[in-house]
Figure 1 (cartoon, rainbow, N blue to C red):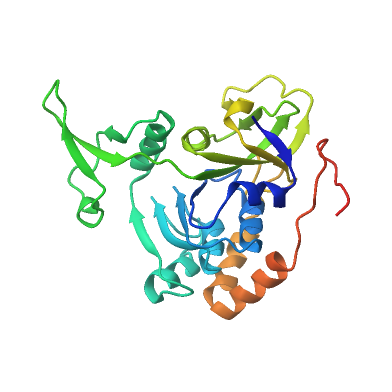
Figure 2 (figure 1 turned 45 degrees about the vertical axis):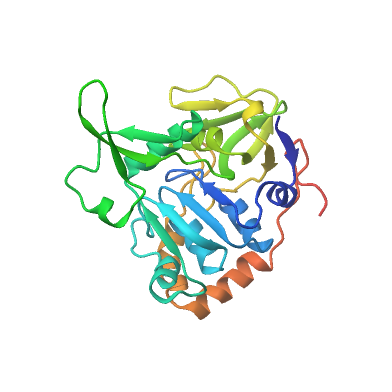
Length: 283
């Protein structure tokens, strides 16, 4: 059952050194605040999982949190390279980074298999492509009914999944609204879960057509963090900060400017503690 904690308490309880960690959210509701607290707490040797490891993992990998990245696309969306990820791969700075690359379809199916407690995902894909040559976890089976050859990938079962959501109610039920991506499956597949939310409300309200409600029994910890997805957007709360993504290209290009920015904007900033009702509490 979900417990409402401060962000620092929730990260400390949910993410441990050596964990496989999924921080999901497709184009919006990306849990930046939780990632920053993970960096501040000095987590290391993480096996990071994310369909689109953009700025959130560029920062974590650049700060030496990760030993491996499982992904299906990587970069600064709309701008260019993720320079810290690239530096880790090409130059082992600040440490070597192992890569496991998949397609979007494979990642989505692998999360779904994990959520269903299945050992692997089976789907039509990887036909006539080169990725299986460099990723030995991509295999195949023959359908016992049709004889068709189908692709398989291992199920994704993160030790910890972290997502951001618009709101939760006081019973711990969480509403995801807008582009729902694979957040539901990533939560259901995980051993431990943390959801940061914009606010706690008495009633989640009527769900929209494109929304998901995670029952409280699927969530481990909830932390109230208004703006916790910035510079990504949160549907109905704030827009995407496009200028940040553009500026990040220059900030992250060199190690020195990256480290200086992280010190000023992440390491030297402590997260606000929030009370259960969602207003700022004393530090």
